[in-house]
Image (cartoon, one colour):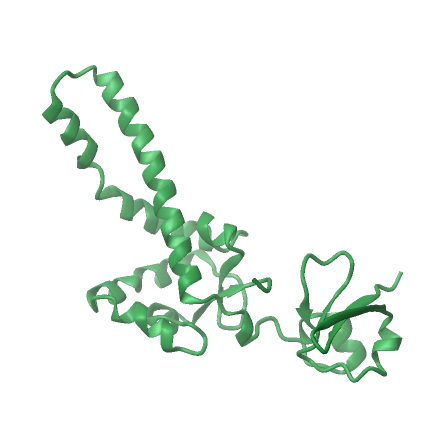
Length: 204
């Protein structure tokens, strides 16, 4: 059965309309549409059925859907808070098991493994961005994911390369990250070199 679509016109949703009705409505590629089964509106050029019916070119990504740098920063903060929470639980367990009365030993144990967190974060990025999730827990919870520039999922090699290049941003004292704020596609240095994007599926 053919799906009917709600169409945003003059800033207000109207419909639903059949595809035949939409052919006479001057629908443009960037018109927002959705069916009752879709969780949010998409631009018409992103839906294959509408592209075939209305003569648009199918496109998977659009500039409006690039994840902003503040969203990406928030995703990283969420990931680190999650790792820190797990770390604190493990430290409490270790201290309880050791049954040590020495305050200095407890402090030493508490801080000795902190440098491991960024290493764990690196490998978490690599494997999760190359998975079906296409992003870490923080990215997934915010509805953003990592893709290639042609919007395909990353494989493990591409994900490792992308995350390794973040060292350039760190060595540049953060300039490589700041570059993303001034880029139309929100690409930091490691994204440009690795030819990757961070995109969002829904309008937020």
